[in-house]
Image 1 (tube, helix red, strand yellow):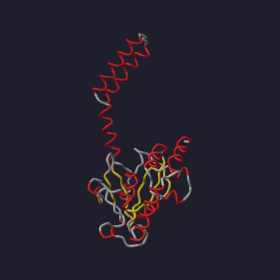
Image 2: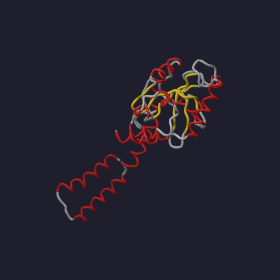
Image 3: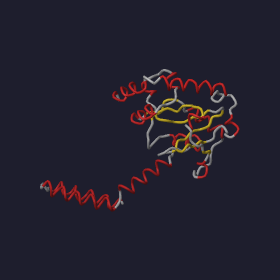
Image 4: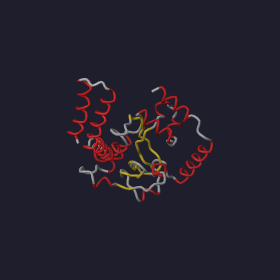
Length: 234
């Protein structure tokens, strides 16, 4: 874990002045408009309800969050900052790509509340699309929002086993599941556990044994058993 802490200090502790000025200016504008103040009216309250599940398509994945009202969204993202710092000012800053990547590697993250703009990051927002594919009915809106608020803070993160989709599914439906993870594992299984891979593995094993010229009962068993298991699992 120590190398990750060192990288975090190198990448995070010295943000550029330009980014800091832009962030400060945007925060001042949002505060003036009343977008992220808790208990204040927001333009998003006209189209979103407290407890709505928000979905933002990305390039390689989809990001999820729970709308809390007042232009605020609770979402779970990988973040290295809670591990290397306890400064509230640092923790509240918008998560950069460096913090996100290091959080994935360190398997740590946080459930945080950001403005709708920061959550969407310029992408289109989809509302409650999971209601059509989830077999469980959605909980009451207020219960969904309260669950999201209760889970705020530092939480262990796993790209496959506990990510932003697991978080929102628990909040809205009471079940910890990720359709993205299921689809990814299904795709990997098709690629790895296939008859073509079994044949290639058997061929490579035979070529390796002939090249090394050291055929023993142990190496021969491995060369035969591995492609056999892949073939049976395909």
